[in-house]
Image (cartoon, rainbow, N blue to C red; front, side, top):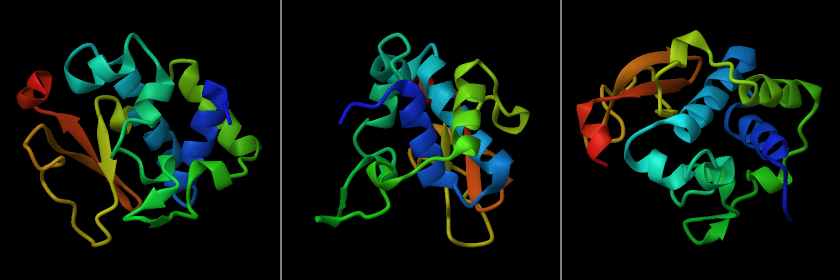
Length: 148
């Protein structure tokens, strides 16, 4: 099944942050678009000049972009999402070049499933804690990122 960039972004936003309110969903959309538009490092190479599909489907990045996790069916995947007007509105907002100011430099997010965010993520030192929005922690790149 081939989705447009708009459809992919609406589905991944719904899947990854559907319960996080408008700002939580905008923050996730911002991270994805930051990866699409970054000018150095791993995501620059992956995006190949701005390919959102490459970023979303990069292996091991988004649980919602795979239909299996740990060898078992993952029912919470973007193929099972049914975005509504709000999700499309956030996708349009992000695709138009908007970024949530709280996550303007962030390339990663994660839900630690605990009250405190780890100070670095990924754990190779390429990202440092920037902010937390609802249940997700957001990370900005360190100097180490450019060499990834």
